[in-house]
Length: 270
Image (tube, rainbow, N blue to C red):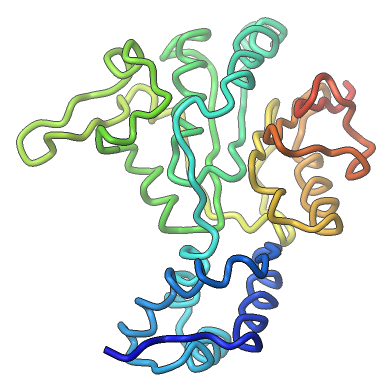
């Protein structure tokens, strides 16, 4: 087995490429991560250098491999009820202030493997009923994580953050060959839809939303990319709608259309 190494020049090629396609600034400290995640792809394709692999994916001759590379370099950790204060705000402020009888439409704009989406489902089912008028769009750049989210099935080692009462109320326990897993209940999943969306390009016609979650993604963007991405999302907000970002993120100096309600929670004036 040959040892794979990456030169500074080769790593810089990948940095420019992932910035171009995803708007993500891959820090110099991520070189080891890139080698680990892409090394197996080189071996699978019988390529002997990262330079060869870059030429292969950048050429556009294999769209599937290019997507695989993007998936491997943009997938981030997530878990149920992450940064729980946001879900409490949804429960305590947004839902009570929403017009009765009108569907509450939410967009999870960087949904990853779906834990954020299904946390939203559980909160809205609690507050508005499993048969209530609400919907959730989950989007991500990665088709691989979207497929996991769409399935709504997780192994029990992924229950981090999920209250046992919700596991019992809103999830189905796997049996036989599915033992050790759980499935989000169909009455919650029917409120969801999924779509691949690149936030770094013009957005497709997704509709308008009362709440948009964009959490723990902008930490990978430079300020210019942040401004462009946030401007696109604000266009998808209904008047009075909320944009919620991660606890280590801020829109200070990024967008003047939305006003801060409290740290990490912003509102488009009605």
